[in-house]
Length: 402
Image (spheres, helix red, strand yellow):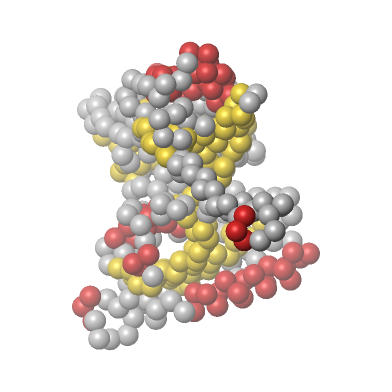
């Protein structure tokens, strides 16, 4: 409504109706197989010059050729006109925002909002850790989410427990997990706040702590490191063939020494370096097939054979850290099927890693203990609220692990 400054009274007031512009409309395009970003923009009425400018802006953040089918693009503008804003999904956690102005196109990164929560779970072993009977906030688990926690839990206790042999019916666990969730419910990150594992009558606890400027590691309630100098195994799967001085070879059909341990695992499973060191071999080597060899301290070497692939960057002279994925399980070389052949060599002689007594990593230093104890007590308080499920054969009785 506009009012005349010279009108003496309301009789001189004129009402003017200014039609509001229609609200902007958004359309969505999904990159199809064999389609490029340029082709999507061409279909939305952009000129070749504008497409070139947009592609060059995108290139500052990501190579346009690396976008895979399924990437979503949102184009917003006035109805019937060329879009003035474009949102392009760079990855699960960030969007590239492109805005048109008089000087061309400007760009900015928009981060997907993340919600942080805490998940409390308990589990009772009836057949295996992967198929534990669960309690706690089970209804909040996403599809396949628990299996990811199993791998994480096995990694934490990899030096203290052999999950291929030591887990028994009646064993139990309780975990408190901090999660970062995207708006669509998918996990961005996950980390344990506290773990309690009851195994063969003993109770093992794991509390994470990060030294200033250091990495996040797990300690028991007294501050002793759970991490060993070497992980107990490079893949969290069962042993299919152990260390032996005389084993019948399934391919050669004769007996010979088996100076390593075979782990049966699905094709493509990530293989982790059991300790930090320097790569001394990475490639194809005779009957080993595709393999990686790492030199560690104290005259120790480890070998990882029959790999389907070696991770980019893993080459002779490269430094690797304990737990870093160096390759994928395969069946290259002299092999009857997908598995990992793992060898442990000390001062030039093969040793059986399953029977060696290797030391743990250093305990938490005294100057960090006060802070650690506060974190420990708060974390264990969370676990105290998790009830363990009862065994199926005793649904009305007490929890088996209590």
